[in-house]
Length: 518
Image (cartoon, rainbow, N blue to C red; front, top):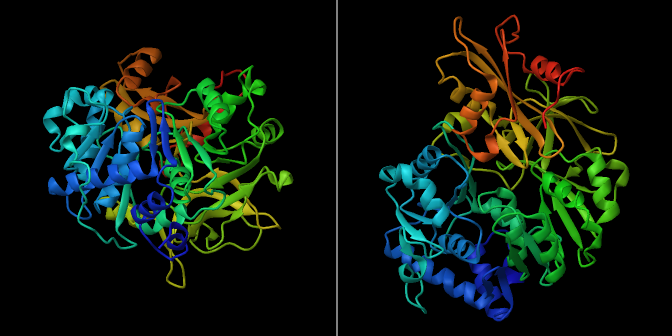
């Protein structure tokens, strides 16, 4: 079957679609990075050699293989080779602390870990805790180089059939204190994303988000499945993004809001030729109406905002170019997505009323890895017996069916497109003997969308400088979780039942006379 025929099926395997593309478009560039170009035929052969080597290592269907490295053609070939072997990819962030990386490797039980020089250096303090075999994607000294580890050219793995509900990947959305939470996304979920609209054989997508980000594969999979070309950035840089866009005549890109803001703030932005762009996408964080309008005004091509979760469920899309009067919304539910609003009583609210957003579709997580209790907490079962995923967001639908987000029921902070869980930071602060209690809230940030700020009450007779405490914490957490500010207070405001009133902390911090977060 051709790739187009496979994609028309209710379910299929991404690895099979890429095999079909290799047969139809053997010499067409599939992946491009700073080191060179990999064609579809070459990518298919690399996937085979990597999958065969994983099977040689004893990696069985459904078992995990981790990746901890910067984005590159080798990284993507390894990721896709894992899928061809029938295994589950577990991409990890190199910016995390060594302890958290070790915790996540233990949680997914990876038998093989693909790394680069930066990752091996980050893992050095916890090397004794790593049971998996290290394979280096960049030929660095630690571990076995990919080139010699792979099976010889021409090797083919044993065919593996996967089910729709089998794990495709595990995305770790939080964890800085030894409590990682892995979102298991099944093949059915990624298959639905690979069929996403807006991509074709003529697509050239610029991938500037890291390999451990869910957003990366929301853009990469439909690009490759449709026979397009993906240009990979190891790390986002605004100037390089614009140069690559112009050089490769990029047609699509998926960015988070902070990236759009950074690009548009460059004095030379309007000097680049971006006329090749057909569509731009945005996801992962609040996207202000003002920024959407500026993107539409200054950047050729359409703009689509996706609202959804890594956990999946119901997603919405706003075609900003088609609905310029709806930029304050996140759009309407995608076809086949059931999005509802719940009241405090757990029942659906009346039309026009406010409630917590829940949703279901073909794109839904299996659950949180090794955490059935947390999985149950994230679910809502409808009166018809259907499973929905809770978002923790509060919103309402307008009269045209567009969703307006009002607040987040959960405390999660989204900074630069990455999720930060205050409880992780609060638990780390609690390790200090001087601290009686701590609370972390998200505050507005022009650069990041949101940024975490901590409020700390000290035990009687103890003293510590706020800035010294902030620097201490920031040295113990990942880059994306670092506090922008820390305030020492006499006590934390609480409700009559003892719940910390984080809204009062946030409002007081942002009140006139107090400096807002950067």
